[in-house]
Image (cartoon, rainbow, N blue to C red; front, side, top):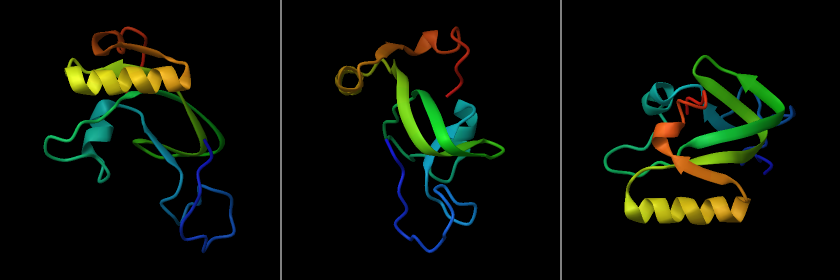
Length: 109
């Protein structure tokens, strides 16, 4: 997937330092939960591991990237959400694994 910017006020490649554009990936689950973009309340979040490339900006808690592709999605234990995750995994031709395996693989968020 390629990121795009709705503002296009900058001339740099996406993501730009002075903009919020790009794909976001967090270094840890705690960083994701603390993010101003995190879902609040009972919202369901799909977690996994992604490959990032193109222009990637390294931030303290994560990254913003020009291009991204999911590599693994983690199941939540919630029946309805897990069905959606399995469907997404089939679309992207990637694995979906139980959430308890993510730390065993060295993934954080």
